[in-house]
Length: 157
Image 1: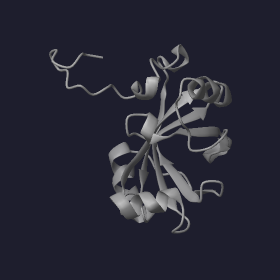
Image 2 (image 1 turned 60 degrees about the vertical axis):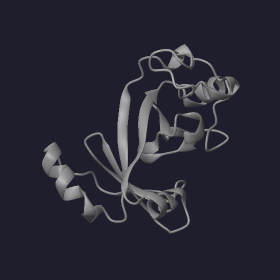
Image 3 (image 1 turned 90 degrees about the horizontal axis):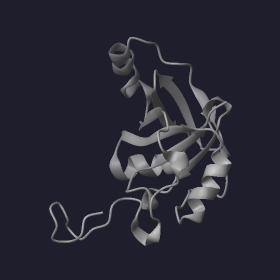
């Protein structure tokens, strides 16, 4: 982090270093991007374009009851739509409109990494791993402790 008054310094801390969190654990170094997710009201809004751009067909929609969403993938782009108007994705769309929702990284053991990160002061949207699409165990880092970005950790099978 640069000091105020140094080149590029503005007195603000880097994402992930406020509240004394320090450098994220080495277990985060070099994680593979799993996917990016787009929140939509309807799959019809974006699937035809994504299929054409990516040259691949979307997967069949899958309901993820634990998250209150239905998802499908076009390559590494996850398209999510809320099943009801009272969940996080529905609130996201209501406040911000459809668009980029989160980025996801593959991890070996989501529960262990949650523990390491929580010990450093990082926050999550749940107490432990949750079931996600495709039977993966997942966890979401709270945007307030991840530089304003919703980050999903996806346990590789």
